[in-house]
Length: 527
Image 1 (cartoon, rainbow, N blue to C red):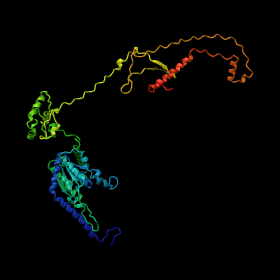
Image 2 (image 1 turned 90 degrees about the vertical axis):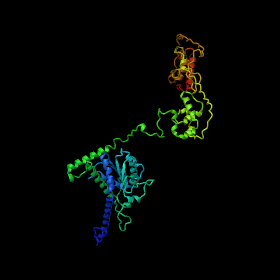
Image 3 (image 1 turned 120 degrees about the horizontal axis):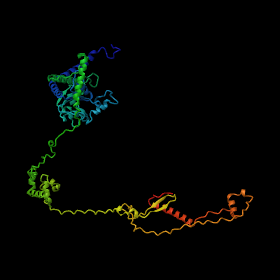
Image 4 (image 1 turned 30 degrees about the horizontal axis):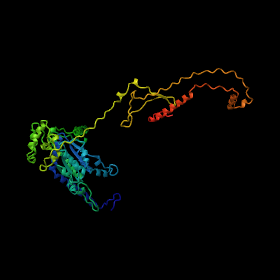
């Protein structure tokens, strides 16, 4: 019989109940797996309790669905402060499945190298801290590097994995190491490989994960043990409690107190962030492993700590090297390169000028006594060119000749200055004033005396000729011609003698001024 409102067949309840029963049976097996790890759970709880009693925090990290275990630890009902949940949204916020902030991006970022170090860069970790890293497979790169970074900073790590699933999976790390390889304590959720516990008839792949159930049981088992240890130590934790148990007022008081304590503990993780560790120079080890220099140590013995082999390689030449150093201390300079090479070989602490870097790298057998080389001639420096001070050679203002003025066509006055002298290295003549004695003397120009204007006597009275009858019809040219023929044209204005010549000279000056302006680099006025 088939029920129209329910697609499942009513006549076959036994098969449906058998699948449910199988899943609950598998969950009981997870409970048994957790119970088998009671001592390991107590050991992890002891580490966490020591951290909380020291005023520090337990750092909890999980990516993907493992973030559920982090939120199960704190904050929620029945939990208490002392745990620092580190949940990156880019690795765990995938509720949209596809699109922006989808599952594909989260799975990709979970295997990005260096992301774990950038996350922990935000905290000032201490060896008193402890860490809890959860990953079902233990093979993704970010959880592995997170545990590795904790270990590098001296923080003990507790890992929660599914051992069967981790053994069947391949690590995303190049060297093949997994999360459990960087953990001090490892806890197993008990989930099978693939994290699916039920085989459904007719379904190709199994269903029903169990790592979350097994992981949450481990988290809460650790939590109650830590609470017991803190209470025994005389510092009972402030537990977030529901109003149904203690009332609204008490619950609100517990919440505020727990959050304040969490803030105080968290502030210590940022107090000294980014500060470089202070270390005295004496406590720093030398790179080459040699002891520090000391004035109490004799100079002759400074090269003896390199072992007897160096002494055998030097042969009997150490004595000569000591004598050479003694002469150098008295201010004498040796002309032998062999003595300088011996000084450089004596512990490497001689003067810089005495060292032979090639001899320091050669073996004792390949060293030879070389003849001193002749001193190399040092080329003499080029003679310093004398720089002439032009200002000192410039004559006084009173001795200078007046500059010649010329008038351009526009009527503006300008001055001309003689430019001469030798060309400088840049090709530009230096500005140098010549001495009055060196300048060529110009011939004096004859001065033309202006001719006095002689007033002509008044003309005698002329007989006016009557105008012709067609005078009104004549144009201006015909009228002037008629007046000139009849002696009645007006006399022209008197003109000074030599005016034509002066006009020509002025025009010549204008032409010369324009040419000189063009020759001076185009600085003349264009007309």
